[in-house]
Length: 217
Image (cartoon, rainbow, N blue to C red; front, side, top):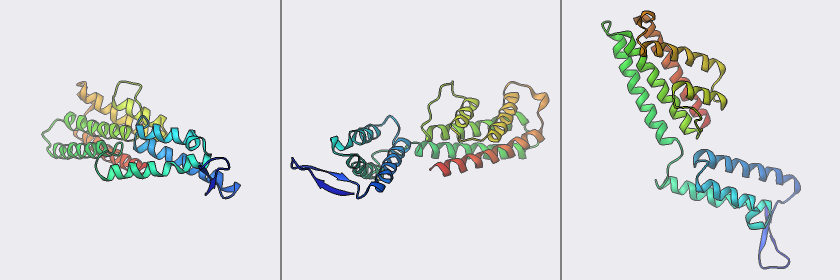
């Protein structure tokens, strides 16, 4: 872009150096807006201000001026994050839920190693660990719940957002069904072997959710 002096005022505006550059400039502006929506929060003042300055073409100067004005906003947001004044959306909750899931799975490992423990306890904790991780992914992505929070509500929302595959949902449904049996006292279908299988399934799903989060970061 280059600065153009206005003909009838002391101001000016930014203009693409050639017609082919304008789509690239617009694309980068959209990427910047999407970045802020994801990491500052769709309802944050940062996003509202960024959208306003872009839509107004930099106070009615030019499309390019509106796009360029996003740069200082992004730099100031990054400076606020670096100073610890504001948080990156989902970063703290993901760290907290990751730790909680790890602690729960450690308890699962100990329960399954104790042949005298009831399998329902380990199975319920497996479901809790995965549900916590699902909630962390939902919140880190800024997704809005339309159902009462639950394991099923979380994975349905993530599937709707194309973050989970159909196979992911199938695996989660199986684990959720096993957990519900344990939670509702349907012990005839449970065994130490099923508890061991639930531990394996939960660990696989937790790694899968980590992969999704890292890919979206």
